[in-house]
Length: 502
Image 1 (cartoon, one colour):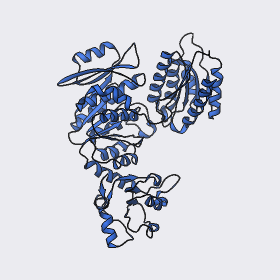
Image 2 (tube, one colour):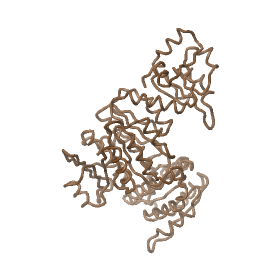
Image 3 (cartoon, one colour):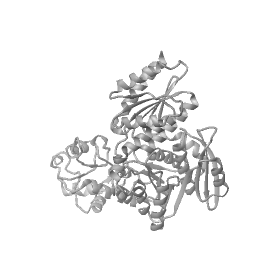
Image 4 (spheres, one colour):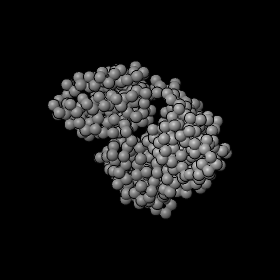
């Protein structure tokens, strides 16, 4: 962000409050703001500090600390007389709704940016996609991206306002959980390229009857002039909703997909429609072939993936199509994946002797659960290890919760889980699915409900005693955020490390 306090006043339609002199005011209005923060501990010199009330603390109470850290201006709901004596020249913009005002500021910053703006949404994997795509773009241009998982009505403006403004491209993530969320977020971002990675069950309790795909594809009606849309063809509802909104809006729509068979992939390479298709090599689940077709060219390459399964292939197809549209060299795909750094607790692999812990505990929904179980199960089978699933309940599913957890149990049985440790509600539904998914002659899968990290580690330690010294474990930790499975992952890692040292 590169805005003066005077420009901020024009955007907000209000004059700031000052305790200083006329000369102080003139200097302050010309001072350039270079970033934004909503946490006083994160304030940098020249930041706009947005005072927001929170569940545990009110940002207004930390305004003085923010100024001491270098805040150049403040956005607040009320007057801040406590700043007067120490910071009389710091402008304070008082508005009724700081959250909405912050969004207007971000929209103005976006309007002044002339590089590529890529907006990403999806039910599962959007943060990983953001990291892969920004890594790809960074091979040949300056790129800014969403900070961490800041993808809501506060996080998106925060990420936008913390850009420098002279980048070649932005890659920004948008998460929706309630009606109107996408309209608000996409209205701020106005992407040049809008991407819906996938659409499955997630936040269904909040999104209501219109469905996940409908809400996510609202982005396509709010693109920048001459913008284009990208979506995955493999989800029938997403395809239908994307085609409908793009037809209505007159937006070009491009599809990518993951091939189900080698023949389907070969047909696409030979004479398929414009778009992109990926195929996981049947002899090597970490090797993926990918082909991008445009009107004037066809490009094909292969890439070694950082994890096995359809989720990684789907992400690869998406970034390949985006690269093709931007006419980037596909030869850098492999380097881009090597350079990408996944945020914490997202398929983070920890090797402990003969065991592997996969910490994907950040969050969960039915689609992401299925994908991570498939990836961990494939890796486990390739290495000859036993799959142990440490999982937590998937929340915000409303009426679909029981069916989704039963399907999760079936998925675990299909991917040969040897032990399931469960935290939270819906345990009976998971057990029902585990039993229903058993193949003929397969024994019941041990199922342990735990409340504490120590109980979980003890169950795994007991299971380890039944295994031969040569056979290792692949342990997947995943659940909705409120389960706090990251602490269980830490306890398990200590257990595995100690086992490796024995």
